[in-house]
Length: 358
Image (tube, rainbow, N blue to C red):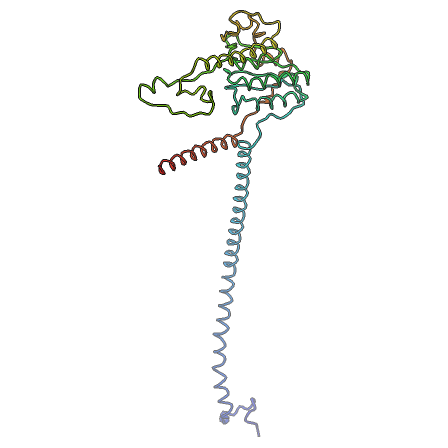
């Protein structure tokens, strides 16, 4: 008797077991159900593989862009710092750097310029000229000091200070001191030049004007015509001396002439002391007249014709010229102008306030 479950049983009429039939029906659909899942898995794997290289490319592009941005920011920062340093350097040179020449140990001709008005607060003031001369004489490399003069003069006080310092520095450092005239060396400028060892001029330079003046204006006649009365109250008989709105007495004129004559004699004494026997005195020499450079050489007011380059090359034998002239830097000039503007504004404000009160 054969078993119904025996596969070797070839009986066609073999009865089918219900359990086995249900199992086969249940198992049959299971095989196709697994197929979509594996297909989806394969599809997602292929899609993920395809998307992986795109993501890598995008990441590389993003990181490259970030790197370029960082580099660009670094270069921008570097350029800004560089330009800031350049601007600060230029500002320091223009506004704050001292304009006095640096000392040099190489043989050279030291130059100090005296140009324009000789007065307190000017570029040719005694403060600036004396400081420049001291630096020039103290430099061991300077073979001689040259005053390059182009000035109509002005203050005898400032000129006297410079003249005295020239005499002192020459004796202390035992260096020659020359004066070279460009266009004009008159009045207080010649007062200074007379203390030099030698004076060089151009044949067309203006030299001389050895005299003293005091000028102003008187408005008394105009005030009488327009009916304006001058109300001046003083404590002291001569406190209103040289007031342009008050008449000048003969006693005041005489006193003024005496004072001018005293200063004139001081001027003449300085010139005679400085020039010595070189002078060929004439009645007009100390009258306030001025002469050309060629005439000045003939009269003994100057020594030779020559320029700065000539003196450096032929006289001093040191062609290198170093300028020791001291000047206000830009910051100092702006400060002075700002101070003057503030002062003028303050005065105007006070006047406006006083007017409003009255």
